[in-house]
Image (cartoon, rainbow, N blue to C red; front, side):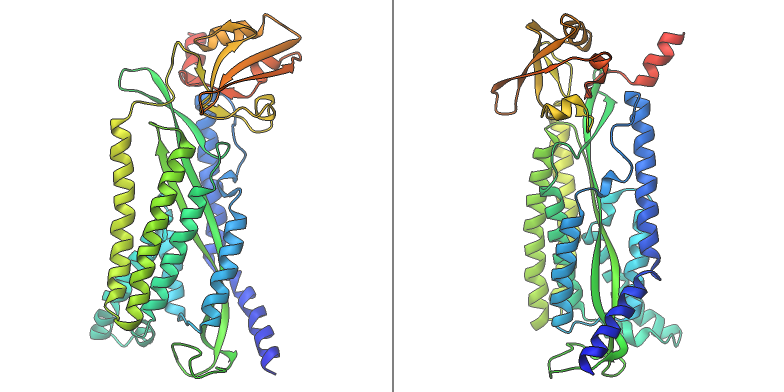
Length: 399
């Protein structure tokens, strides 16, 4: 009977997933973000660079592994979250993501602000009303929520660390001297499938320590939550992949610091406040420190007489198949030294059947790339450079 109860509650938990508005909002949010990005790409480069929903691409392995491990740990540990807490977390994720800034989906903000509400709201509600969920809110397992916060920060760190040069979004912006320079936007949205115990169900405690927190009796159910986490950061003064690695390492250190306070709160409950405070302040400090460092740096993607820096590579194009990477510098084309885009395409036309490229990689080593040319290829190599916006050039041509 015990196994049957688990299977039934598991099926119910999966079914409850489709009743959670967070699931549908995550799809809408991805669609809106992709639509906005593609519109900007067409404005600046005259074409779509990345496909729709690419903001969620290559996040599923981290999401699934993270969700399975967290679900096993929290269900196995008997940690219970009441329905009001589940609803509050979902609402907070929706509210913070309405702006479209994925950085606000960091667990430091979604869990942090939820914690502040859970800390302040129940006494106020109890003072002025007899709201039935007040008891559930007051008996919240803050230690469990703090540990979950640290785990989501670990997931965020891994999302940063896994970003490759083919997963950052090129943009154009006017520099301090009025010239167009390039920058990149790191942007990811991940949906973490997280099973948690909720009050009232067919599952009975099988040990004195399980579940950790008893709410509304001693029977429990399962619910599958599509919890969101995200990241977003504009990078202008360095290679985007290097910036992603640096931020990822900082967030990982913050996650373990938060975990320390979370574990300490099991023995001294007051430390849970420290966990959420460290998460909020620490995440803000990481963003502030990176932003201030960027202000002191010169734009990395700027015009140069020493060659052409690759601002972006369109997936699936000849440049992508040649293995060219963002941040590399094209110095010669068909033996001719180049310093701007006009010279680049002029050099390509010197040999209509074949092209040879000399590219300087990030280690400073020169590598040689070559491929056969086909009709229309020169403008379809799939390389993006820092230059004036496409729409501006089109207006100049028609005026």
